[in-house]
Image 1 (cartoon, helix red, strand yellow):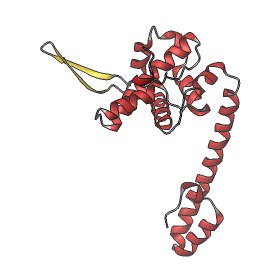
Image 2 (image 1 turned 45 degrees about the vertical axis):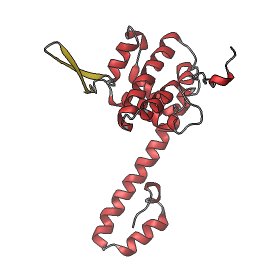
Image 3 (image 1 turned 60 degrees about the horizontal axis):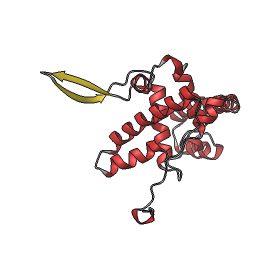
Image 4 (image 1 turned 135 degrees about the vertical axis):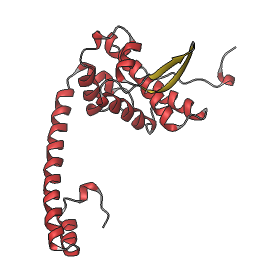
Length: 196
């Protein structure tokens, strides 16, 4: 009996499941559904509190101007970053996110591997989720344009997403370290529209 996650705690779904399942199986499932209901309520309470805290936070407001970044993603980025001033530049911050490729060198030749995954996984999740959400947005950012360019050139989607999340990390560093507002990318004019 497939159902969406949020439907598992509804009484109509529970009643039909109880009729279809053996009593012993139902007791276990009912207990798990009760726990799921408690966890959903706790998650809603926590997310509501995070949203309240982010309402008047200047850096959070700046980050939320980026397509794909809402209050929860902004709060995650800020929490996982702590003090942006501890990073000397965007490159150091990007390395902290773990979204940079591992470099292997041998006999004077360097080869790029998978990303390092160093740093907080929550920060990588937030940056990746922001890219995923912004791809679907009508308002592109430089990172989503970068994703589209990489995908158009034949990069696998996962690699293009990682590269775009890395670019977003650099954008976030500049915005937070300079207290700058988000600037959407300039749209390029067609060649015929350019003035000679």
